[in-house]
Image (cartoon, rainbow, N blue to C red; front, side, top):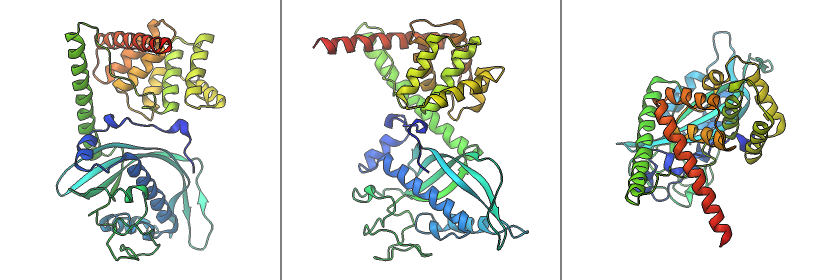
Length: 374
């Protein structure tokens, strides 16, 4: 399945905790290679589950993971094998990196959907209704101190030693040079796949999130200090336009617009402009609007159903949309404060955020005019 552009979340490099340290130790490391490799892992895992054999994973996942999968792939007491069909990937996102001994770990979230299916011996595959959405974290491992081979980073399923394309088979060695491919000595391998809600993963991701917030706060403090020295008002760091999934940003925007019970013509124009920038079709816009019109409280609905977690970056995106028409309604402010309270921000914090974003918008407009005059 091909992932639509509007579903992708492109996380800024600087927003990935541990990335700077990894690149310093491994200059050839790049997120695109990791995402492509995880994509290969996902589809091979899906294929292994479909055929009931672990062979598709042997060269890309550790032996311990493959052995655990063998148990999962066994038919149940009735003889039925269970797996998912019609799978589609919504996003692949590098959440963070931890450099540890003896292995470094990369945590990559895969948001996907699939139709529950099962097959009895000698019978056709049967499916069970509608697709189910999942958020899984693929935990990758590589020996601490290993570095990316630049030529290997261009291919997601080649031998890291000789560069030969992988051959199908049950062995974990390269068919050409005999090197073991799934030990993590020179290439990232699959160590585990866990649900995003898993307590251990949540603890790790919370640690990563804290590190990310501290990094942003430190950067903001440096900017504020620099601006203070120059006796100029502080301006927040540039906002990554594509740091959030277009669909999810549109859902939050619609929820905000419907906070007062209706969407006027001007607000509808803003929604369509946002959708146009993110390649979201008109039919999808109407689907989202109808979704939120059907609920009692749009704000509660979006905070409980969104695929992305509320954070400062999301609030900045929402604030930019709210400020786009030059005015901010009390309902929009209340929504921002309600979301902010969930991440420990007070009403004063939200007021300060809005002031900073106003200044940033004004400064960006001045820069554009200055460039036009040149």
